[in-house]
Length: 439
Ligand SMILES: Cc1cc2nc3c(=O)[nH]c(=O)nc-3n(C[C@H](O)[C@H](O)[C@H](O)COP(=O)(O)OP(=O)(O)OC[C@H]3O[C@@H](n4cnc5c(N)ncnc54)[C@H](O)[C@@H]3O)c2cc1C
Image 1: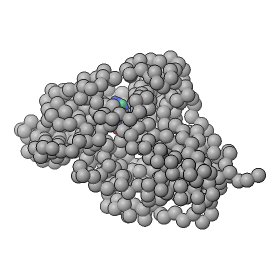
Image 2 (image 1 turned 120 degrees about the vertical axis):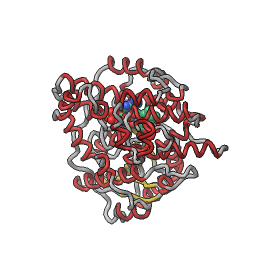
Image 3 (image 1 turned 90 degrees about the vertical axis):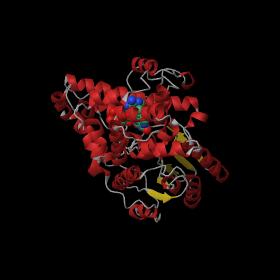
Image 4 (image 1 turned 135 degrees about the vertical axis):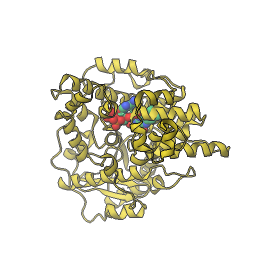
């Protein structure tokens, strides 16, 4: 019998736990080549003045890859990380290694889907098939209670339908062993690749925020949530700090696929949490459903043309300068500026903070939302185009799927949420900006 050889192209599914296709390949393939393509174009500075992938997310990604590689090696496999475009790298590799099948997570939207098409077209003449799968949603696509084309356009309807249709599938058991990795595959170290991409100078975001990439950290964080540390939140209830403490902050790992949404569901749903923490569990599950909703909606809508979020060219220097002030957190509105600086320094922002600065950009500064969405996409550790664009469109008022207000009054919000200016002082370096409001 001939040996079955396959490539698994890792994308935003950087984990070994609860990975349906990896589990299937583990039992059915004799030689498996796990590959990740680092495309330099993703890290270059764009005409906008900032890269598609900002340095904090780039670093987080590299940490995810280091963790994935260690996990694969511990199970007898390896990770072949290559600089280059997938549609060039993968066909060449398939030919060299005599591979006839490539497996890859299907993305939901935009350029990432176009890359899949280009790869399929490049593989076809070689007689190599590209087989897509989806492993990033809480509800398995085959378990949706309606055909994808009939997905409701309101989150409330979607949530009700998926909740009554039953529990999501249970996460798969951990993998102990993987198929053989080809001998002599020359793979540069991640340190070499990081240097080639000019990323070595980036400081560790973990020092600022506690976000360190990789499934190992993500699972430990989940354990922490479940072990009842969150119960200490009871002391914060209703008081200062509650909003920040409520955030689960699984987003960065979910976005890179380093944590499976079904694993979160299982942990938070069956861990005997206290009643107050039980509320948090419900909130966490609801957020995973919001994420599913955005992803399935992106699949349903296909390419969102004008809504695709590509920023238009600047035809007015004044508008561009206004955007630069917003981006740097120098609008002169302290509560807005503090949030923008938190984003730039940490790569993360609370949901409220995102709405606040987005509302300010669209409704107070009168700027095109796509510039704001592009800056978010560059900075956020949890950048997920399907969620980012859906929520930006809601802020602009083009879409009302979540039924949340699009416009926020920053002065009122500051008076309500940060009456003593603690948050502003924390993130604003310039005393002048604080004194305009509090001085
Ligand atoms: C303008 C704007 C842009 C946003 N861009 C993104 C983005 O690029 N990626 C992203 O994951 N989320 C985005 N969100 C949604 C939300 O703000 C973040 O998911 C949330 O703040 C992340 O916090 P967390 O890490 O504690 O996530 P958790 O509370 O751990 O939630 C887990 C996941 O649920 C989803 N989720 C949580 N809250 C929301 C929400 N309000 N709407 C939709 N999905 C939600 C996210 O995918 C998140 O990763 C955006 C919100 C706004 C207002």
